Length: 332
Image (cartoon, rainbow, N blue to C red; front, side, top):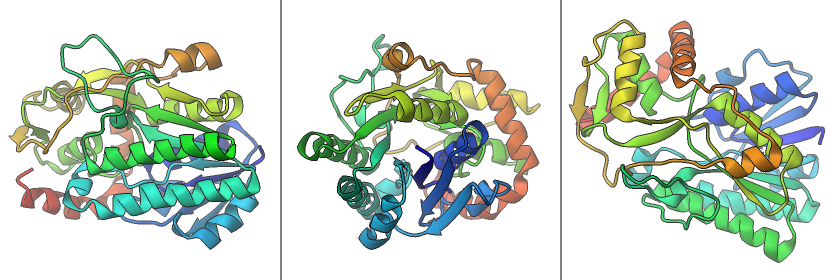
């Protein structure tokens, strides 16, 4: 697979994957991205022009998608509407992108017999109780709780159906919460980091007891590349790095690493339907395909992420004021 089409490659996780591919392979990459508010061409700055081409467009544009898929050896499908708060405010774009967009890509992959890898989320499984010893596995029933997670669950099921009904050469991965460079400031970790940089107190939903299973975006990228190269067609692989932390502990660690008092944050109105706990069991990926995360120490990975946001204010500053103004209207 020498030519990859990466949808959503100017977004957070997609751009990290593009950087990873360029650094670790000799593949050429075409990025297809609509450049909504979450897509940023600056996230691809500095990559070699002979290895990367960019196309601005919508994954629901069947003619454009067909042209690009026809010229690719594999499609890696990151493009998605992905922010829970936005899905609660306006669900429609999540249906258009996550359902119709995925369908459009699958039909093109079907016509051209193109290898297809679909990026999904652990949120399709719903949530676990805080004291539950269990973790999500590939056989966990779907139980989504928001317009975002339900449309991602729908897109996963489309992929499974196109594999079974039409023989599309596809795999799926469901990953836990990512952190790292190039993440929009609306998201939990970069919002708190950039608040501290700006002299604003971080914000914590409710009591902060909600648990997320954190993984560095570069580890997610290496896992996806492993699945693309070695994964069994029709299979789902869960990607996680054993990084369970509750939100309160993450905020306090950010403050501590940034030289602030650990309690220098404000509690704000909790998100509607806020899932309690996510936890990934990535045994299948590790044992079957031999993948291991490089960032095993969450504190070290978080410190590196803080350093990146401190050094790249010109990347995140344009979106910061509007993001905080939006949250202010919701008391968050």
